[in-house]
Length: 481
Image (cartoon, rainbow, N blue to C red; front, side, top):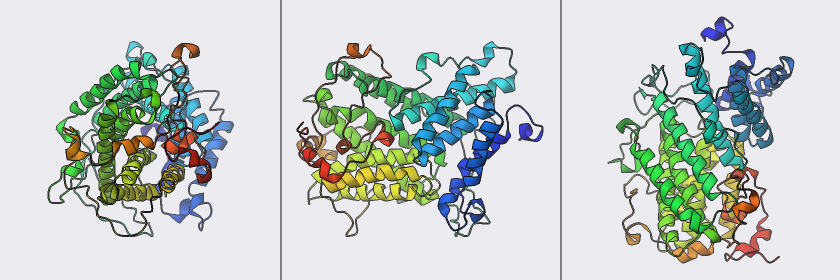
């Protein structure tokens, strides 16, 4: 605010309008709509003003910190709205400005003052996270490579770490406001941010090792254990106040941490699925022993995501949740839908999980219209499996314990037919050798090329396939050329 009031270097008209544009999607006020009768016009004035300022002030020619931040905010918002081309381009401009401004070089090695050092570090790591998430959503090459990240992860200013946070209730909203379910709690914004970019590094390793041209079982098995160990080490590094397992709450008394902590844990569990599912879904990464263990890990992670999402919904509603949580829910659905199809009539647990997760996706789409695409992918998979879960009331067994990270036996936690699960994934020929691609880990092939699998990597780039065109995949066999 000081920079805004005194026209300082870290604020601009463009950044201010970008903040208004990106936050307006969470507002119920008709004043922020271009047409008061059309909710889809919310924030349109601010988005248009951002475009005007980009041209008027030549912001793409003269990089600055406020422009980097504003473009990252807009890029993420456009992706969440389903306008992925614009999101990709705006984020790309911001990430190249990062290099142009030298943000990838730790400012402590320069003559910068403490405040500038802090600002530059935070902007760099924020850009780093946005780069990795966009790569995950769109399946396109990243811009900031791990080898280029020479910026310290230690922050000087941690005063906001334990600031008390509680949901904001708009006094001018026409919609009844939900009273807080819990007293104000510390936001832990600094430590959660630091753990988020550590998790983003692991995300990069997963994509580079399992979702690239040349991935084979022989070279992936070792990496599987290494990356899985890295994920477990990451979780163990969390301090007690950052651990969150809503399914272990007793007597229905749930702890409601701030949303940023819930988002952090949801993406952690989504990465477990991103890591393990290629060993089930891709023929060339599948072995005789790995699928059962990997599918159990996927199932446990999917249950955890659904549990976190329902806790988020209970505490804050999902109408103000970020697209990040939508991605985690979609990933969970790709597991629930197959377990539901394989569980038969003896159990309804996975069907209940699927219904709950799909319901979360639908609520998330109110602020993030781009969620419609992953939700439609799940509905298409349900139709292909002849799953009709719209009738009847289902129990939702999420908060009664039983979701363990360690899975000792298949009998105790795994009740579906693994062979039926495997048959739901079309078998593919092995990808070409990495040498034929020059060993370029950024030239992704999209190992899960078929919509029928429910793509995890680059899902926003997939075109919807009519159900009539999916008949060749119904029994897990490759299509006839």
